[in-house]
Image (cartoon, rainbow, N blue to C red; front, side, top):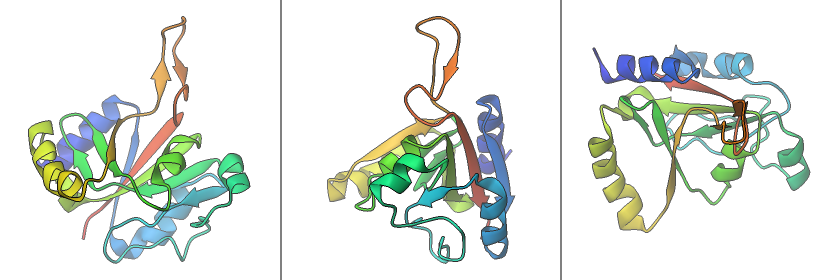
Length: 166
C-alpha cells in the first residue's frame, strides 16, 4: 500500500474526508469542498493558487470571524497518523486553520511521508534550520473531558483533505 493510500485510510478513521485530484481540477474541487464564506492563505504548493476561487486570501479580522471555511496548505502529510503539518506563515495560516468550522487542507501527494520519524526528519531541515514553527494537526478538534464528545472545541469541527497528484 502506498503512503497516500495509508494516509487516506488513516484520515477515514478520523472522520476526515479526502479528495484526490489533478492540478487542473483544483479550482472546481475547491468550490465543491468549501462552505462559503471562505478564507485562505497562500498554499505554498508550486502551481496552485486560490486566486481563481471564491476564497478570500487576505481576510480582514471581520472576515476571519465570519468565515465558515478556512483553506490552507500543508507542508507534509503523515500517513500512519493521518496528520498534516501546517507551517506557521506570515499570512496567518494558524487562525485560518483553527477558527473556522471547516478546515480544507491542501497537500501535494509527493509530500506524504509514511511515518512520524520521517516527518520529524523532514521538519528538522525546514522548521529547525529556519527557526520556524509548525502545527501537527490530526483530524477535527474534539473533546469529551466534560461528558459527551464535542467537535470543534479548540479548532475546526470538520476537516477535508485535498490531495493533489501532480
